[in-house]
Structure formats: C-alpha cells, structure tokens
Length: 372
Image 1: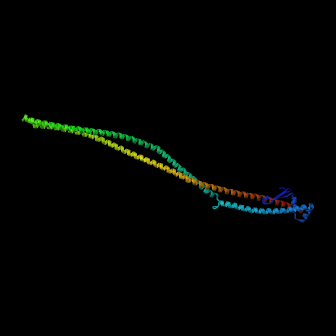
Image 2 (image 1 turned 120 degrees about the vertical axis):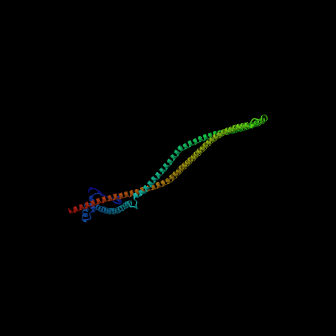
Image 3 (image 1 turned 180 degrees about the horizontal axis):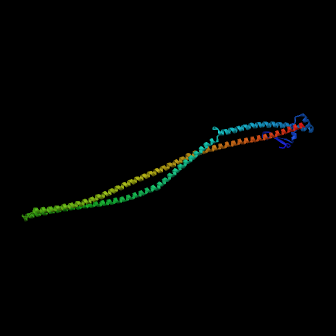
C-alpha cells in the first residue's frame, strides 16, 4: 500500500464491524503525537477543532487496536480448539476405538460379502433345481418312453400268450376228444373182440358137438387149441396195437401240454418281471417328484429367509452409509469453519501488519522531523 494513500481498519468480529477511515497520513501522524510542543505546533498550523478530532480519532484507533488484539487472541484460542478437534478426529480415525473409516468399512465389506455369498447360495440352489428339472424332464422323456415301450411289448406278449393258451386249450380239447374217440374205438374193438371170441367159442362148442356126433376119429381138441391160440394171438396183437397207438397219442398230448405249460409259466414270469420294473419306475418317478417339490420348497424358504436378511442388511448398509455421509458432512463443515477462521485470522494479521507498518512509518517520520 502507498504511504500517502488512505488506510482502513475494520473492527468487530472478523473485520465486519465499524469502519474507521483516516483521510491522510499526516492526520494520522498528528493524531499519534503526544508531545505538547508538537501539539502546539500542530495547533498553530490547524484549528483547535481539528486537533480535538485527531485526538478522538487516535483514541478510537487505540480502542480498535485493543479490540483487534483481543479478537486476535480469541481467534487464536478458537483456532487452537478447532485444531485440537481436528487432531482429535484424525487421531480417532487412526485409533482402534475411534472413528476409523477402515474399521467402519470392514462391517460394510462383511455385509457385502454376506450378500454376495447369499446370492451365490441362491444361484447354486436355482442351478440345482434347474438340474433336477432337466433330469426329471430327461427321465420322463427317456424312461417313460422306455416304460411305455416295455408296457406295449408286454401287452403284445400277453396277447400272444393268450392266443397260444387259447390254441393250447383248443388242441387239448381236440386231443381229449381224440382220446375219448380212441377209448370208444378201443372199447368197441374190445367188445368186437369179445364178441368174436364168444362167437368162435360158440362155434367151437357147436363144432365140437357136431364132431362128437359125426365123427369120433377126428382130433377136435388139437384143432380147437390151434384156433384158440390163433384167436388169442390175434386178440393180443390188436390189443397191443391199440395200446401203442393210445400210448403214443397220450405221450404227444403230454409233451404239447408240458410245452404249453412251460411257455405259459415263462410268460407269467416275464409279466411279473415287467410289472416289478414298472412299479420300480413308478416309485422312482414319485421319488423324483417329491425331491423336486422339496427343492422348490427349500428354494422358496431360502428366498424368503435370505430376502428378509438381505432387506435387513440393506437397511443396515443404508444406515451406515447415511452415518458415514453425516460424518463426512460434519467434518466438511468443521474444515470449512476452520478455513473461515484461518481466513479471518489472515485478514486480521494482514491489517495488523499494515497498521504496524503505518505506525512504524509515523514514528520514523517523527524521528526524522525531530532530528531536523
């Protein structure tokens, strides 16, 4: 600032109070003089009223200076308090029992990790359910088709076995009819044989009587024995042939019946096996359906449980973030207030330095004047 220009000082808090102006450096010099001889010289050069005004101005400046110095002391104390608070906040940030932002972030990171883990668990459960559904679909597409094909095959086999059984029954009935007819023929043959034997015997008896009457010299006994032997041989032959034919028929019938019975038992065994397979497949299907329902219920319960937990964690996270924002805002306000105080202090120090320079210039001019 030029020495001949007007100087200004601001009183009150931070220089926001009453403004005191000095129109010239000479007036300030005159106001600062305390020697009576210098006051008399100034009074000779200026009116008495001007001297009184300068004295009042000087008194006002002294009062303002005292106020500035007091205000400076207050600002220094306030600055020390704010600096102490800032140091305390910084110390708490680094201390374990204070507001360490790293410590504050740890529960937030833990909550984020929990949310991430819960999300991964839900994704795994969803993946398991999808895999189960795919396995169920594949099972239904493959195993059910196989089961249906097996059922159709079994039904076709059963129909074939029923047809074979019906044919076997018809053949059995036919064979039984043939056996009955053979028995009837055998009975007829036996009856005819007996009739023929009886007829021959009757003829023999008649012939023996006739022989006895007609001729006593012929050998009737030998002749009858030969005839009897021939007829016995013929009867045995016929009986043996009938027995053989009857036995062969019955053997064929027994073989066919055994084959049909074996085929029927095999079909029934195969039907039982297929029925057991079908029951096992139905049990597997029911088990898969129950497992899918259980997984769906577990998924629903997990979603509900984790949904509530996620909501609670989100609320906690929002509260911590809001608290963190409030702390940052509070710290920002404190820093801003500290900066305002520093600015006020710097302004006061600048004005005090300017005032001191003015005072030093005044006293230097007075010293030069006294020397002259």
